[in-house]
Structure formats: C-alpha cells, structure tokens
Amino acid sequence: MLPRCRVLIVDDHPVVRRGLRAMLEDEEWVASVAEAATVDEAVRAAVSTKAQVVAMDINLPDGDGIEATRRIVSLCPGVRVLIVTLYDDKDRVARALKAGARGYVLKDTEPDTIVDALRTVADGGVVLGPKVGPEVLTTLQGTPTQLPPPFDKLTGQERKILAGLVRGATNAEIGRGMGLNEKTVRNYLTAVFEKLGVDSRVQAALRARDAGIEG
Image (cartoon, rainbow, N blue to C red; front, side):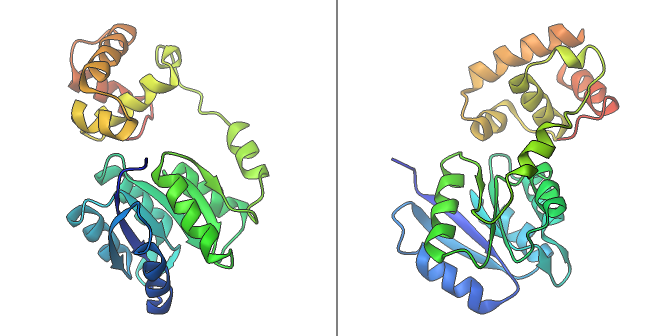
C-alpha cells in the first residue's frame, strides 16, 4: 500500500489549485496538500512542508516551472515532480524530464487521470500523459550523456548516488530518495570510490563536478 504523501500544488490560477486540491484531499494516499502560485513560493513551500509529490505548472508569474523543478529536486532529495501544463511541445517535455520531473501531463487531460498520474509518480513511476508524444523518450534515450573515463565505468545506480554527493546529500538522504538503506548506499560508495581512485566524499564530488555530473 502506498504510504501517505505530502503534496504541493504549484499553479498561478487559484481555481486550478482549488479544484485539484479538492480531488486530492479525497485520496487515501494523500496526507496533506499545500499550494503555491510562484516559483519562489513553490521552492519555499517544498522545503517547509517537506513535500514528497509536486504538481508543477510551467508558466508562472516570476519564472519557469521547469527551473523551479530543478531547484526543488536539488533541495529536496526524493521529491517527485509531475508537470501539469498547457504546453505539449517535445522540447519542454525533454527539458522537464532532464530537470528531474517524473512525469508530464496536459491540463486538458481528464482530472481523474491527473490524480492517477500523481499517484503513479508518488509510487515511484514515470508518467507521460496520453497527449504527450512518446518520441520524447526516444529522443532522450538517443542522446545519452557520454562521461569521460573512469566515470564511464559507473553503473546507473552508482551515478545516481554520486549525483547525491554532488548536491551535498547525506547517505540517509540519498537512500530515502532511491529506496535504499544506508548500508547499501555505503556499499555503493565504496565501489564508486574504488572506480574513481579517490578516498573521500569530497574528492569524489569534486571530480564528478569536473566531469559535468550534476546533483
């Protein structure tokens, strides 16, 4: 059963926020619902409420919801963001997913489908709404990040853990974000240090930044 989650709705239209909030408050998996109308409010609310799931609009009065997503994902390890917007062009979808969003749906999608998408994201899944072209994933998969040696020897899981070091997360925070216990994270880090030829978290993080790995 999905643990109850703290949800944050980010949209500059009060009617949209209230409508989605009313639906979410009836969901058993939702523990609480907070609201924000701007990028700055969203970042502050995500941190102060320890939001676990975020429904994020793109067009906000003080900036871009995709940049807000990037900031929130960096500050709140383990948070899961679903973009809910009017824009359906593949460039925005690709940017959102690269910023750390776990899904992308359009506002004209059925409200029940948006709630289902949030539940799926909360449960660790990735969602592309029915009107978002699947070619976006193909595009992303077709342009993998080429890392220099020895970083190219790292597994996908090891890269994620290394990214956690870059953003300054503790082993516990990294573990929570990836569904791993602290001991498992430590074991992964031992392997990472060995592959990179370093002795400490600081050395690993500095080398990762130089290689272009972002947190």
